[in-house]
Length: 432
Length: 163
Ligand code: FES
Ligand SMILES: [Fe+2]
Image (tube, rainbow over all chains, first blue to last red; front, top):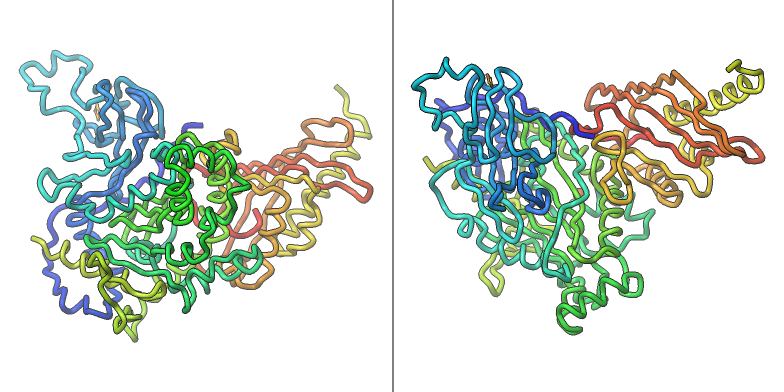
């Protein structure tokens, strides 16, 4: 069952990039230059300024339920071990031996009080500290303190969602999440216990495309009616209404790169609990009963009408109604989406359907995602070609407005989200 | 145990069925392929190993009979973009073995090697296939087809053709 480390990255240049980049020449208000998706120097700079500096989603605490449980995760292209310590706290270790650099763990998950490097047998505690090295007389007088496994500088969880920053300094997770915290709360309140779990394993779907195309597509409300028309047609789904020209749904920029497609106006118009999930209360009586018990009937009804948000938490956590994706860049033109079904703690009947619908729609064979994948792969080929060199992202710019909370919103099909993502990207990349 | 002529005949029948299924898949003959399924058929492609409990864990594909039909209908819309244009496919089947017989069902296994060519380039897929076949009036029907890709724990490119 255990397999090799997933998504082993190709070598990536580390350290500062010499070439100064003129962002004015690449990012404008309504267009972006194609080289942003193809230039290896820009990709290397992104690793430094985004993936190794800001907060990145890593995993969920429910994936390591007991002390010493670990699971292989990643921060950008870099593999890390997410491990629950003796004290119950979840930490992240770099899977890289401080001696000669070999990996110390090759199984994707397990329980371990220590890790032993297979090369020369150095061993490390679950907190990364040095436990011992064979033939210790060769290390007389050596300070072992500095010879532990690297620890990811900052690790913090919000409602079970574990985020990491490889930089010791910088905005707090709280500041980074900003409005996204409220959206995570909304996700969780769909669980009768208020808790979400990730307990059914991941599919790993690889595409030949730059990671930013994937991020942008997640809250691109313009494409579903076209890209997914085949499955909507044969499944009798009502999803096209949500993403049509007449839809009341909104594309929202939440700040800090976070974006969402707010489908609630359409669901509220329908006023049918569980319509967001394509089902009815009669088919999920246990779940409905538990929700009523937990929140009271009125509130439960409201929650079950609104459903789970469709939110992209920058740069790599996408929650889409029933599933969760973690986006991992591997190379300038290579990205993996790790995807699993959301599971609501204490709600087995809806969980089963969440798993089955997720399996149907995402991953390499999914009714939805396989078709998205060829779109990003097509755009990746396109940005390598000349004339025009730019991508136009101006859709709906004239009708953008601020909502009651001050966030920028557009129609569901507008590129308000994409433009927000690029403004944030630019601020991260320009920060020295 | 000596193998009787009976067993050879069965092996041949099963082999012909599996070859035919492979050819229908390679040639994107969706409706003909769908007709090979029993009413209670399960089409399963596990992820992350040889397959745990598909009711509890994510699989790459875990279709019951109605979802198999949905998959085929999606392919037939002509707008299943991950198969537009269709992958060019050829698969080699080998090592066919009868693993068990019970009443009117036969369990058989084989290896499959699939060459795929499409706009993305060339992709090679290797798999172990397990079949549970039921003999019906006009031939075998698939009750279970389980495809264990050798690299199913690694990130995979699109797998939108019938595997
Ligand atoms: S490389 Fe790990 S002990 Fe030598
Ligand atoms: Fe999509």
